[in-house]
Length: 306
Image 1 (cartoon, rainbow, N blue to C red):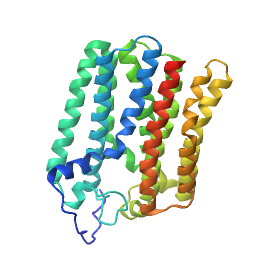
Image 2: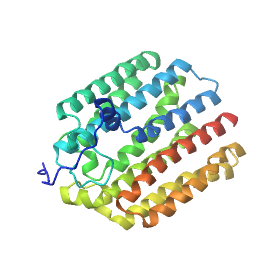
Image 3: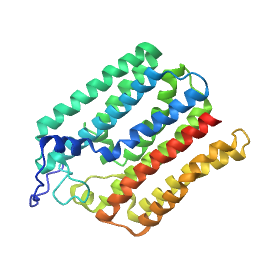
């Protein structure tokens, strides 16, 4: 375990406990939970197997898991000494003292338990594979920042996000409504995973200087700033190349190109990432989250129209 870095405590804003909890759940990251559910549900609608209650439950699980990951990250990064007063990102409620560590830990457990309870309901409807997937997701949420081998601190956070917030979330949403999985749905999940991973890449790019000091070895720390910027570009480009390739394969109608309407926003973000550092990357992080949601909405519409 890395020792906590000694630094002066920042002057805390005067906020209510309710506002502190809102900070803790990190609302700007929640589009990453909604986006894959939209795409998975759109695929179920296109295949005429949409089930409203199940889709809502899947959305609830996705949101709760995202909130659980955020709380776990806030709590465990404080415990490991990765969060200090020098961090350049949004205020962390545990490290700043706005909320007590025990309270954040308790909230994390409650949120993940509620996610598990809703997941059990989905398992009753869709079968034991959903239960297995749900348990794996909860364990992964804890392993992302906690446990003896935190994934985020060993360069595996990007892979984790791509798998669980892209592939698993889209395919899982489709599966619980239809009871099966198609190659097309797996294809749809890939660009969503790429864009949601891009959100994490910006977060880690911004935090390279402070992560280096505290020993948090994210992939960005391992490969450096320039390679991380290239990773971001590759993720964004991949998300836009795929629909074009699908269309050119002649297996998809022109509606599958709808996500390309969000390309101007992507271009603005890529241009900003080229030179931005530190706190200047915070708007890019929020913009990338918005891009993932906009892209997913357009892809969902394209899937339904197809």
